[in-house]
Length: 310
DNA sequence: TGCGAAATAT
DNA sequence: TATATTTCGC
Image (cartoon, rainbow, N blue to C red; front, side, top):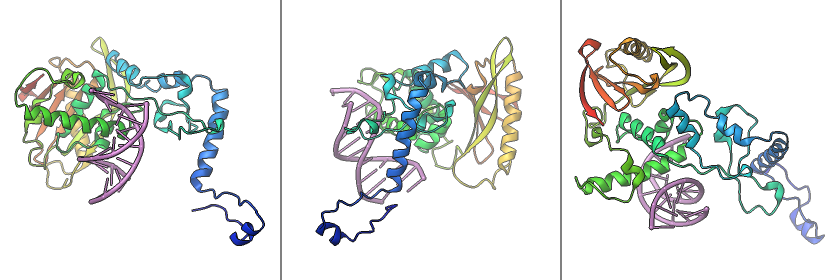
């Protein structure tokens, strides 16, 4: 919808060779103001790259820092601009791609740096997909659970599409080990749970997953641990028929369990975000630390190393 | 809105 | 060619 309208009727304008003011939509105006803003900003703020690096401040472990550092293949400084006003890390997603056919230098805007799926990033992706269940893993949820700054739903959707094709291909090849052509995907083993599990096989499992965000460093047992706020990821319906009954009850339960795990010398946590706890509708609990998964029979003492050992 | 397959771009 | 990104129907 145009924001403005010519006062001169079209016929009249044509008759007198009046070139009408072009229609400007809200999008046009918004874009123009973004252009202006970012032009101003690139002059005063000279370190978009630092900004980018700063986006990953939330990550504290060496591994995570590597993850963050390597996530983007940054080409040149000119390719990066902050479109929105926020300078604090949270908003890489506001880097916009704008039409590249800009002959007008004032409309030249950068495109988002191309995402490179490093083995670390892919590993994280696979972990999350495994937790969700390969059937119920969708881009948005995966993106949220991966909790990697700057990662977009589109990035994930693309990767997921490719990964599904890969899985299909692998399934077709049954257990023919070696050479496919995909080094990235081959670099991270396909979790055994993908082959079918009671947690997601019938489409009713894997309802909730607690996950970490906003990590804050905290000393623990000599190495760095992270405490965090807890969020609940919920998928699918029916929270009424289960034992805990409410989201807050799940959160409480998650807190309880994770606190015990952290205090438990048997668990060699590198960082607390390695811990995930999943609940299914029967209030069964599955606990995952890194690449290991356990079934938890309510009491931690009963924990046995169950299946997956990658 | 957002998913997924297909098309397209790099 | 591989794969990232965009498009488009649902």
